[in-house]
Image (cartoon, rainbow, N blue to C red; front, side, top):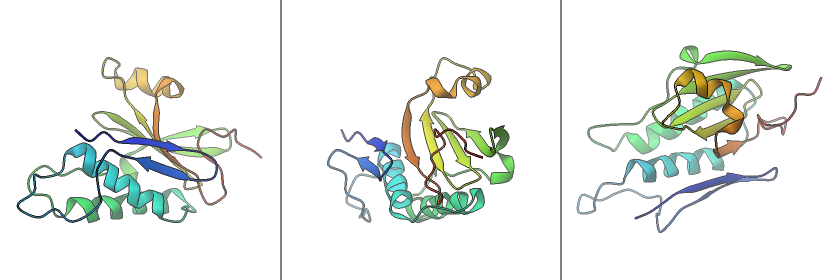
Length: 154
């Protein structure tokens, strides 16, 4: 079984995986799991330069999803339209938030990205109030060098 681990620090974003390799999957191979495909998507996002805005960060995600998911028959993962995200003012920055089955996606107006693992026992409302308690599995700073976890500066 391949298990993906994601971590980030102030200097880089890294995606750690088991024996998974990002490549085209031939018909004779078993189709990659959702976890493997998500790892490929996040690896593509991590390799891109930092986004300057929320819309640029969202487009980066959409492009990565399309690149990985276009070759998958049946159930495909996707990212919702940015206009469907909930907008929250956090200090001096707007943060766009969207919940998925197992993840909470947050995009800052500065282009920062963050994905947190949802606790299956909480409701969406409880999770949005306690996002700091959810485990971060991916983060990427915006072009200004700030992460969503950074204190806003004026």
